[in-house]
Length: 459
Ligand SMILES: Cc1cc2nc3c(=O)[nH]c(=O)nc-3n(C[C@H](O)[C@H](O)[C@H](O)COP(=O)(O)OP(=O)(O)OC[C@H]3O[C@@H](n4cnc5c(N)ncnc54)[C@H](O)[C@@H]3O)c2cc1C
Image (tube, rainbow, N blue to C red; front, top):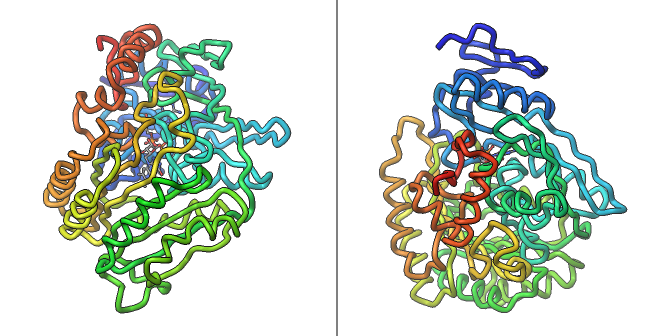
């Protein structure tokens, strides 16, 4: 097909095609294993641009991918030969500290939003890597340091502006289409392109208390036991992660530990630093950590302490699972699987869930698994672009299988990595799935928005 005039009426953004300046950069996403060449990348500046491009894509029968922060692990925000509706120029942020509300554009990254909200001592629970997009993370759920205190990112979403498959622009809130608001809280990009997110904001003191400890792998069992015991009984203010990683060659890591496996215990306490220090004491008490980076710090700093562990542009593969309570056999399995990690940037990550996440009613949002005790993320990241990654993917899959006995039932929709439609359905569960399918039939019966963790209209 030849499209002679690619800029449709009403579109005032920038259209990039293969060979144009900026095209190569615009087609790249976080996961360096994804190498797709869209026919058009439409860099949108406004809701009008987005609506024009949706109509354009539909009229020409183009597959449409929607890009926010570009962190989709399976690269769902870029397509081969179709149209990318690139929202990254839409960076508006308006914080109302009195009403504790924020309007956020769909191209905003968490670092940008956190900075603006923290100027007023406020924040929304967001992801833990600062260059992840607000849009995709929120639409799939959104787990971060503040989640035990204030819930998921999607729980804070109170209104949205959505461009639907026929190019209409909808305003959505609890009064105006509450069912669509329900679907946007975890149902992903299935129902349209969200062009504005309105969030409820929460107080987050500056500084709060947080950071990371490293324990050598020889004490890995004790470290994970202390972490899980603390997690089982932790105050809501305390967010907790444990990761088995390879210690980086960073100045804060003693030379004898660099390049060796370690258990990183990370925490973020939403409250006065002295309370935070007391809350994390068990993580230090069983043995002195080899590295201690816990202390008072601003939330914006906590939000980027692990950025270097997930650099953009490297090939990656991820498996995740919501977990129930973890016993000693689970700890042994985590350590055993970590011992076989196939690259220095790979990791086994366990996040403690519960708190405010678990107190939201199961049918209040499209997000499932609120009762999970923890979330497992197995991430393989490798550096050689020529490496097709079979060995790394195999490690990830085998590790996931070994840990399935502790599953709470399925995976995190934002971490699914091309595991097939059955896993997407499992991530929602049958009741939520049926409701999502009904919503999809109403809003996108032709499945225009299928390049996502798809809920097809036929169910
Ligand atoms: C390094 C890294 C760290 C992460 N850390 C966390 C974490 O701490 N917590 C967590 O919960 N998740 C985390 N994730 C997962 C993350 O939530 C998802 O990858 C999320 O989809 C990323 O959103 P994005 O906007 O950056 O991605 P994109 O790739 O731009 O989009 C992801 C999906 O959302 C759709 N989408 C994006 N914007 C819109 C929109 N405005 N309207 C409709 N659909 C849209 C896209 O079409 C695509 O299907 C992480 C991922 C990575 C790669």
